[in-house]
Amino acid sequence: MICVILAADKNDKPFWNTISRELEKDFSIIRAYDGKLYTSVNVAEMVLTDINSFRQFNTESTIMVFKNIDGADIDSITGNSQIAIVDSANDNLMHHVANMQIPAITCGLSARDTVTLSSISVDGAVVNLQRGMTGFYGDEIEPQEIPAIIEEEADHFALMSATVISLLCKKQPEEHNIASNNKKTHDHTSNANA
Image (cartoon, rainbow, N blue to C red):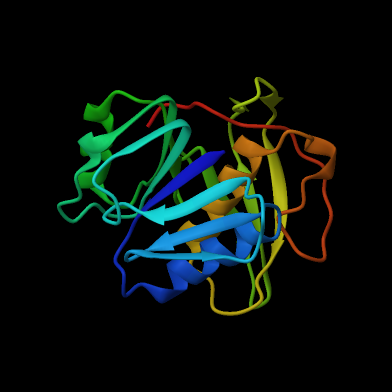
């Protein structure tokens, strides 16, 4: 099971709603926030939680999504396979994650970022993977553009992060679909430099 740990302000509802909604399109998920467990499935592929809900995380595969850290204890996260997805607009966060010495994927609106948005409209966006990466299952992912349908107010960083998570975790790339009504084939993803 993949553990996705989110570090973002609890009041940032567009972020939380966007990432949950997008990941639930591709994966069966258990959500654990604020000491509460939410699930509608018998067997989950992924646990989605916030960084402050548990004192320690120890999983085989962990993806940490950092929009901000606000004093979160990220040293309590252990495991064999870790990767960070980082909002490149936050300079302090970029420095902190670089000191963690784990692979990081940057998301933002710069040509330096691994993932960016190449277009945005009222009801859709195109997420652009600008550099190739390696997924959790060893598959190489080539640079590509991934269309996504935006169903309601979406957080752009969450949309990019959910796309990266889907690419990292998908075992069968030919079945990947980040946009609910827009099917497109993808490979898996993993490390890049922050």
